[in-house]
Length: 284
Ligand SMILES: C[S@@+](CC[C@H](N)C(=O)[O-])C[C@H]1O[C@@H](n2cnc3c(N)ncnc32)[C@H](O)[C@@H]1O
Image (cartoon, rainbow, N blue to C red; front, side, top):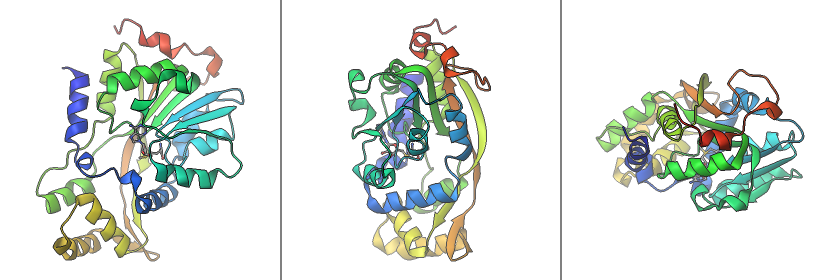
């Protein structure tokens, strides 16, 4: 199996990739923030990342979004750099930063030169690799930017909601982007032994009202206006109302893929092997 080619194929075939990137829209960013709040995100995932970090550490957050990790990490470590292509996500991050000092690079990871970001104790990519077709180049660059730890967080498990709504309104199967299993194998091909930890996390969807839910899904499904009535009825039937908001409740595993220290090793970052040299290992 050629895992690099498999990854590329899954990225290109992914159902959501066929639409416009949602992260460029102000409404989507508003909605995304609401999801973070109601899913207690990053919660335990942040605990996992920050246990290796002290006030001398530096962190690179790739696809940082509105700063779910970058903001709390910036309170703890010496310096945080974020790479984020969406101006809308960054506008929201800047509003939340207040006096926090974070270096921001408004680019896609693929367009970054290694020299531009330097090397960091920990490199993080949380739910941000799903759209990168050339994963080999992207990961090699991440590995050379990581002095001690590489943390990649990805969804695992299938969403019943996505599968059902896609079948109902697009008349086809929902194709998810590549998942943790592909990333694990891609790292293996690169000679990097990775650890994977599965954590059960809430993956609820929340909408402030039915108008927001209909608009969100009309755009995501790229639906013709005459289908809006059907979509509204479907969402009213599928979502649960509570305290004036609409919910789809789901719990799915999230995979934390790490290189460097073994998962569960509580040792300090100073004892970790250099991730960059692991990348050049034998892969056996
Ligand atoms: C689901 S959000 C996750 C944001 C943040 N990491 C978090 O955990 O809340 C995915 C983010 O990855 C960014 N992204 C997408 N493609 C990217 C790329 N090629 N390079 C860097 N960031 C990317 C998007 O703009 C978006 O902000």
